[in-house]
Picture: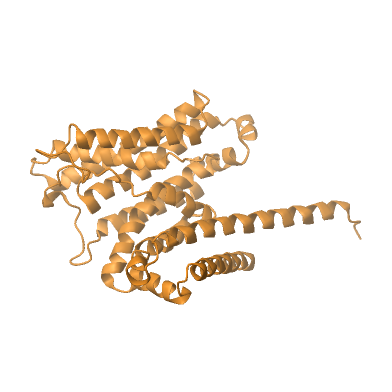
Length: 350
């Protein structure tokens, strides 16, 4: 526990020093920047609601990535899986917009999004297991396909009546919007969905045979095969679960945030979730906490251009620095541990 605290402290110091140096070089007061980051994210209930609205899809994507990382796969295609879920949810909404059953339609849209994201991820898994295509390249390629499909739908079959606009499709009726708190503009159902995804991921990975199998294959695929496990099959399982969570994030973006399909519906939450999971050291509840902090940075950085004439990309610099610092700390720790083990083998035993 002490070592974990020391690692967190080192990472925090490195990020603080790098951020301060960048702010000083740019001529901005560091502590004023940190103050506006805090005030812009947690300074009011409305800002806090915006943080939660960003935390929900980020957490859903992070929960999904825990499965693919556990089995040893780099699911870079999660961004496209979010988009695939958003497209599936929009399709259900547009087909049943006048059905008069908004509750059932919203549930159906989330189910469709789960399946859509899962199938999109399984395609990347099949490219790897059947075609020998690395999941990184397969996922990136499918990301481009998903974004292209979104643009085609917005400017083609689903274009707004009389106009084709980058603003997206025709907004859904308010009866098809995900219910939110009175003045917070954040959905309690979205929060419950994100927490449920975290609980499900923790239970599957920590208390089921599937989770144990994923861990075994991720640690040593050859040894797992000798024990009767088929890595290719579990690759598909992990990708399907990851894509399903990402699809739910896409559905939330469509039904709970934008209330229509827009070209940048994923808001890069998939890529950001990769950083969240790595910084959380692939732990379920660690991903939740890091995701909340990243959401605060994303929302709070909007204040920087208005108050200090700083670019809002400062939050991205801080996020990237955190991940690099974490990787350096973990790498240094592994090297130190290996040296200690080597010394044990050469030192005489008393």
